[in-house]
Length: 364
Image 1 (cartoon, one colour):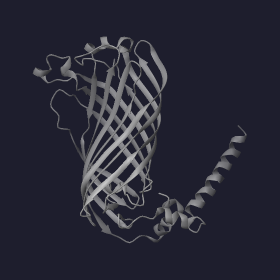
Image 2 (cartoon, one colour):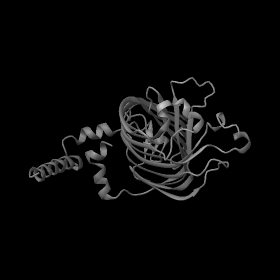
Image 3 (cartoon, helix red, strand yellow):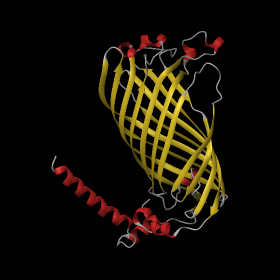
């Protein structure tokens, strides 16, 4: 324990030296950093000295689909598709160069028919980065799900319209995702999802990504409705699943641009994920297992992107598969948004200009 302060001091000094080299403007590698950060101005525009203010509306839904693989089920009674619907959020988005802040103004309950129950949601995102690499951090909490598959086992559903509900079912998910774009010289990923870039000619790129995640699904009772429990054998009393995962994803992204204004863009990445799972059962307790499975991310956008005005609609869905030899779980998150905004001319502060000349800034 006596060596701990010394180790801490050494680490602090090492980090200080590393940080100084990144933020120092006149380093030997600054010229290489500038060359790496350059882009084809005939392909896209970068608004690093504009104050961008936009208005947005967004929603986010969450799903957990359970399926068993052992017992024959031609009708589909054993499938359970839990779904949670969030509120519609409206707000303003303020962006300057690589920094942005979103402020929600109000929420509107989702337009859903009676019989689905209520869902409590907490979602937040913190994203940082530019057009070379991008770091997405998200936290999602949903409590209160209904089974979209209710009609297969409940004969009264057509009359009542009441879904099987799990008001105590909670899903907590944290994910940190790093995304790198090799062809950032020609393709501006954020052009389709933020107002700080404008793609004016079609382009595409390969995408490399890595992520870490924590997913905790828990319930007071069994996950499965009573009619489907007979199909799950010893797994019928499962009421908890905790997963820590690390993944490496690979894919592609691109944008089709017409008249330097109208655009359609998309991205799809998928790859293996190492998962450390803990299954929880009402009577048997916890059971830790390790699996290699799959996870991925798909998103798309469309809209109008002019020199000052932009209008963008986006769709984002990420998934993770938690399958074992007997039970499969597909965890999905679906979000959509619509936004429009204006880029205001503004002067770059002197202190910020110095920051823009550092290796750290040019590496983003």
